[in-house]
Image 1 (cartoon, rainbow, N blue to C red):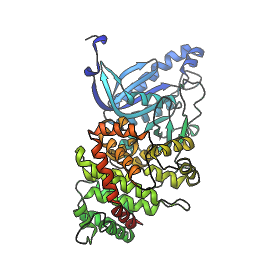
Image 2 (spheres, helix red, strand yellow):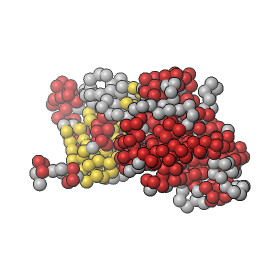
Image 3 (cartoon, helix red, strand yellow):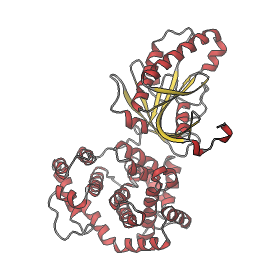
Image 4 (tube, rainbow, N blue to C red):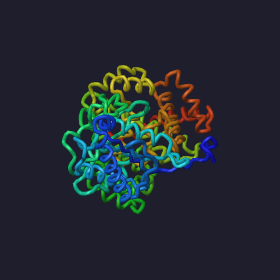
Length: 479
């Protein structure tokens, strides 16, 4: 089959880790030292090929001195990158200055067609490479999550924050590989406005180590979540962890016995709550209770935030049977969908007052526009980073990141549309909150994605109005 006959139907969608390389300043080196560069490039190619082969990578393309490689195992890609940088740094080069290679790693699905790869994952890896300095290795959060337990001795990963790269709609959470022999002047991301083959630069940078340092949930909460994500764990294992914090235990039982769940008999132990409510519901309760206690502000009243989150969870659970979704998963995602707003409120409290002032109608789109104006990032983008740090399941990370943009959610498009619709229903139903006029078209689009009718919307509105007393009961229980 010739190239003109190829179509998307001939491509296979596979998930791999991409490793892209490029020699920094190679054009000027060829101009100044062409004879030495011929020798240097041969040695460069030999060292890269050896590292890639040792760690089972596949070179699917070379462009000049750049290598494009895939790995089935993300850890293999990281180890290859480390070997490449260390071997290049130890080499005695025939050029006046040693070769400095930049490396970018990114994991995700891509289309394989006629021996080459295409798609957004490839584009993101290329964009990340463009802002990497020679001698540096940068990797994205999807890759970091796969390799954090596979670091070699002496190596570590430094959180470089979130980068907004040109032509990409969302920022990328980036980490830097710190390995033996790395020059101290490469410990930070450099100024990407110079030449050196850099074709793009961050338009904005989100750095958790500065103003936006992301808090963590209490250690008991993190331990409990880890236990609950283990398929071999039972209710008793969860209770053993939670029992170490009497305050959290008491709040969980208050929530379980609140009018929100409406049990006729009293739930007296954590293990009973897990058996009666299910793991997913209790996960959401643990996060809500832990976050409520850990994330407080002096000047901002977060009651409206929590009321909106609980109501969105209520709406999502109500709509879930109509779209063949787990009610418990919908409830959990609804509770967490706006976690990025909580981080903004805690880490940038004075500025977040301006977000609220710029969005007096308390609408979803008004707050997004205000966040973009003041921070250059939005709460779904920040929430995605926090969710990844907390090791939440991928489905919830997607709902947090894409409930305002489900078309960007890939396989979780419908789930994110469900949470987005529940979010808008809450704005429309709760007193003091209203959806803007332009939400009509967005609501229609979300209903179409889910295959629902306007009647489902109307029924959800009525359910939220009737559920207000139980929503208040849940809110009172976590205070």
